[in-house]
Amino acid sequence: MRKRGWRLSQALEFVMDRGGGSNSRPSHCECKNGAFYGNGSSAISDYLPQSCHNRSSRQREMPTIRKRGQYQWEAQVRRRGYPAQSKTFNTKAEAEAWASMIESEMSRGVWVSRSEAEATTLFEALQRYEEEISLTKKGAAQESSIIKTCRAIDLARRPLATIRSADVAKLRDQWLKDYRPATVLRRLAVLSHVFNIARKEWGMDSLSNPVELVRKPQPNNARTRRIADTDSAVSAAGGEESESLRGAQDGELERVAKASGSPLLPSIIWLAVETAMRRGEIVSLLWVHVDLNRRVVHLPSTKNGDARDVPLSSRAVAVLQTLRDARDSATIGTAESYEDEADRVFKIRSDAVTRAFERAVSRARSRYVEESKATQSRPNSKFLTDLRFHDLRHEATSRLASIFPMHELTKITGHKDPRMLMRYYHPRAEELAKRLA
Image 1 (tube, rainbow, N blue to C red):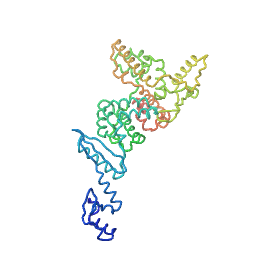
Image 2: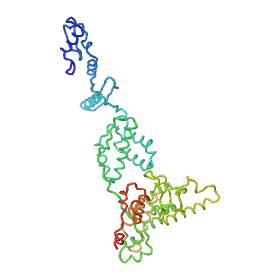
Image 3: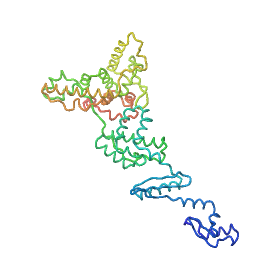
Image 4: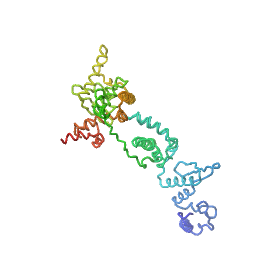
């Protein structure tokens, strides 16, 4: 027997004790396949304890490594109580290493089947994740765009079980060359959740999450873009032309609203900059939740999951009152009523608002440049450039920060963590100077 088994002398002594005399002792012993045999080909192991039988049986169940064709090696592991495992590798060393790992896990009782994780590619996992998980989220549209990007990468063709942290780190570095850290961080978050869901809910218990071990990029692209008003736009022109422009020059939002081809966008712009509501909150606003008498709109469902009431400024009330009057005029003589809970204030999708805003900004910038040429003045390079719809929420919060203390501002904007408001709180130096006076 092997070193871990009984020695020959111990086996013979055991047989002597069980047999009760020298007649029971075999005159000749030999070892075959881990079992001792005496005369008459009766195995001494027949007299050994059951634990020795099991040990010998396990020793005989060795991994099989065989060559398949000219370039591949197949490893097979068979062990009592476990399903047979086999896998093909490019080298014999890889096959032996895999077989040794599987056999070790089985012997320690920690083996878990990897067949599902090895048969499912990242592309397939992303597709299943989108159908079962993403569609239940509020940000399904944005996450769908991220999933589409992830499905296009080379790594998506690989089985989940073969993806390592080094692969994810390489992908992260590639993305960082072309995208902002915050964008890369959102993509990594989706990939990480895919692996976690596969492990927890799709039966891939042995699957590890390679994204968890990778260093995450630090977002350094927090925007502090403020909206230029009429005075700042005029002063930006500088020189002798300032006085001639003062009567015709509008601020950025005024110009964007005028350049808009959408009948709804101007109202959405002013409501956003007056209330600090998010784009999704504005387009999902229902008339039944608008109380113009109390000057409050109720948001039953927000990004962070909590409902909140948003106070309305005089301008916001005027915008909503105009929209309600127009709606009431259009529904006279019909059964429709603004009390209908399904009646949205703005019948437009979030992505359509973004596209309309981008087009309006582009047209406003072109008109501004043409006017500057007509007056032989140099256009301000920062005016009506790099302006996004989300900047309106930042602008609104910055303005409200000069009115309300931090703890009250969180109730208006919906930020759970007051520290998040620090990136929105950017009072101008001249405003601080006025307080010092």
